[in-house]
Image 1 (cartoon, helix red, strand yellow):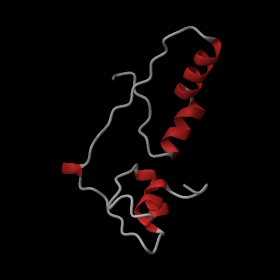
Image 2 (image 1 turned 45 degrees about the vertical axis):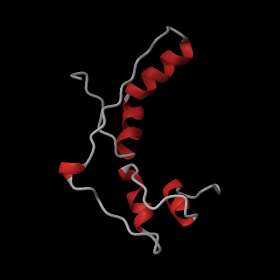
Image 3 (image 1 turned 180 degrees about the horizontal axis):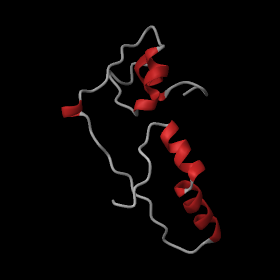
Image 4 (image 1 turned 90 degrees about the vertical axis):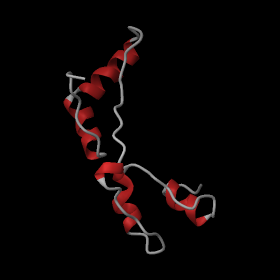
Length: 90
């Protein structure tokens, strides 16, 4: 796949896939492609995925990443990518 290409668009253009279901944050970029048709999956059929984060060791680098992801900056990046913010109620 060429650098900078969107995986789903590349797969379809190479006739390696007839359709591609991806994350919502790809939507605007794919919608700008004149040769592709995009749509939003209606809520009754749309998958909700819950991602987990677990720290298995007290390794300093792992702990730093864990804290970054749960911190304001990391949560901001996740929200910008279309993910819901962390909830400790899960």
